[in-house]
Figure 1 (cartoon, rainbow, N blue to C red):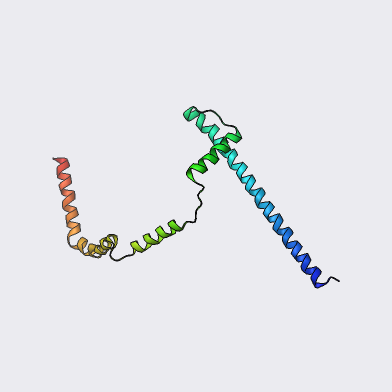
Figure 2: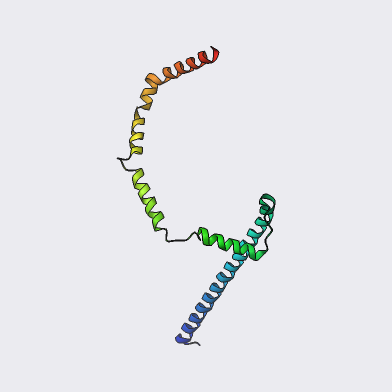
Length: 137
């Protein structure tokens, strides 16, 4: 029969082995995705660029280099996102601000139904009559 200390050591060892395999799996998955993306860039380049722009075909490593260069120039899409969250928060508050011009424009729509009943339908008929007489005349 195993003692409590042996069981704890066994559980600890299993935990670290599981953790190591998980880290190894994610590293291999990341490498596989990187190689796949490089291959896709190479195939797309060789399919499109020589015919459209007359550029030379690329091998795999040149395609990976172009991909890496584009990521360096245009960014990796990371960041903390605090400025994005702040802008979204500001937009949200300005959209529902009762003093904003957009809010005031929509408050005028409460008179639309009444206007259409009283004047709108006749104004539309007059407009159609004017257009028909102008096109026929």
